[in-house]
Amino acid sequence: MALYSDKVMDHFQNPRNVGKMEDADGIGEVGNAKCGDIMRMYIKVDPVTQIITDVKFNTFGCGSAIATSSMATELIKGKPISEALRLSNKAVVEALDGLPAQKIHCSVLAEEAVRAAVKDYFDRNGIPYGDELKACDGHCDTCGHEHA
Amino acid sequence: MNVYADNAATTAVSETALSAMLPCFQEFYGNPSSLHTPGQRAAEKLAAAREIFARHLNAQPREITFTSGGSEADNQALRSAAAFGARKGKKHIISTKFEHHAILHTLQALEKEGFAVTLLDIPPDGVVTAEQVRGAIRPDTCLVTVMFANNEIGTIQPIPEIGRICREAGVLFHTDAVQAAGHLPIDVEAMHIDLLTLSAHKFHGPKGVGVLYARRGVPLENVIHGGAQERGKRAGTENIPGICGAAAAFDEACASMEKNAAYLIPLRDKLIAGLTGIPHTVLNGDPVRRLPGNVNLCFEGIEGESLLLLLDAKGIAASSGSACTSGSLDPSHVLLALGRPHEVAHGSLRLTFSEYNKPEEIDYILEVLPEIVRYLREMSPVWDELEKGQRPHLI
Image (cartoon, rainbow over all chains, first blue to last red; front, top):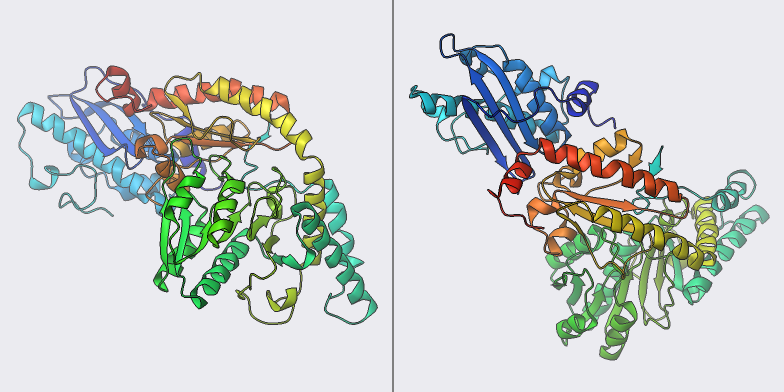
């Protein structure tokens, strides 16, 4: 289908880092089944270097929800947490060679899933963080965070 | 293998229809409104096509109006009946919650113009009852519009019974028969139908041709104003190639109706039996009172668009009522009206067949689809929670 770029179709049909992680250091879940998409992201973090050494995801959703999840895991794997927190939905869209306008929210969900996983890691380890990580549940206008 | 399983969306044009159309482009290209011989030859083609539709519907040729398609015919039927009712001070219309948007959105427009609309609830089997219609009729009811068969779940409505109740109550009865025409027998006399819509491209005719049947004595309001074509009720030079193709396709479909149904029903039932064997899968709509070529299922824990993309990658063309494919945030209004929760409606799949589909295509779907469902469930956090009992199974 020409709805999606080749890159979106590749990440949809051959998703990277898909699956569960039993010993995750942080798990973030955003979206809800009623709306039609849920992303759950698992991260493994090196406690000394604060580098994300492994990432996995499980997603319920459309083709672009799966593709953005997959791309987001690729973009943060091997990166320091500070860098993962700077991942924008725009970067995910660009890395996928674009998304149809009505699918941009999937990239927002992917960005939020990463942030939710980092927040969970911070919570588990008593690491303080700012307000903008606090309230996001993956829905627009529930936190102060801006998306591109 | 390539399988086209989206015949409720549209069908391939049949050889018969195409053969009827081709001479209309370069041989019978006259304007039927012209006095000269080429024009009159086109007018004869138009009259012959009108006669074919009238004959198969048990109507009179002058009761047949050609339109640009089902949506235009639906709009004109509802607007005509509403205007007719309003002249008698009757401004209440009854319909159902799972009509096509050509009906529902026209009704919304009429509501803004001061009409009251009652939309009947859909029972769990997807078949509204004549008693529901009877119970909703008021002294100011001017029109009942109930689809002949639902476009998503394929359930066949009790049209003769509803028609009888409307006739007894003196209320006009319209049916959107877009999915039924050419697939189910229609007799506007026996079924007490006053207005009926059909669309050629659903039975191997061309796109861009619809028919509005309006019983003599039901005055039509113009939706398209202009010249005097179609007895002044639908302006615009007639689409002669399309209309001739539509008539040839309808003639063929009506002649082959029993044979096609006898061929498709066992294939449909085999597919339903095979796919409902997948755990937490449910058939939408009554298993028997449904169009011969319609299968519509919900698979819990997965989303329809990703299912369609993976099927497409395997050569299978189907459709879904998920929000991602509906172009809105909500999944199919038909599945919601049927009582499916949002979560379940997102995981719907519609497979619709015609006599052009082969038995081995059904086997191929049965081979490929369960694996795709399993794969997507494996990836889904929802399925994980359902299987662990952290989230209750809804189906």
